[in-house]
Image 1 (cartoon, rainbow, N blue to C red):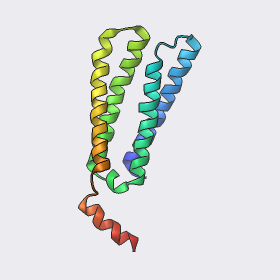
Image 2 (image 1 turned 30 degrees about the vertical axis):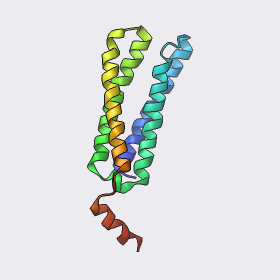
Image 3 (image 1 turned 90 degrees about the vertical axis):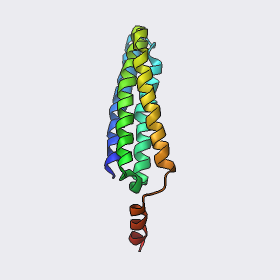
Image 4 (image 1 turned 120 degrees about the vertical axis):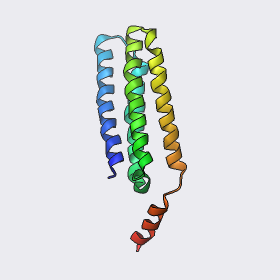
Length: 136
């Protein structure tokens, strides 16, 4: 499995654990005010990271490109900035955290655009030359 795939899958598992923890905290306390953050942790952290990892596992030539690791770094930083701030903002009502949430969201959006570039770009010349020789 390509390194970037493994990193995305490991990161996804961490967010799955955090999402379950946030859900349990809300259930135990009876305060579901942070449910949007819980949903974002699960969808952006767990599901989307796992989908990115799966895409790169199925496209090892694209996973080998430097931009794949740039994508991983940008996306992970964006999520790590956005999600705790969103959770705290919703849980405590602190509106002063909104600029941090917005900043993290913009980083996540930029990382998704990088992923779109990866998906729609063609393989590198080096990887295209390697693929036919391995098919023999």
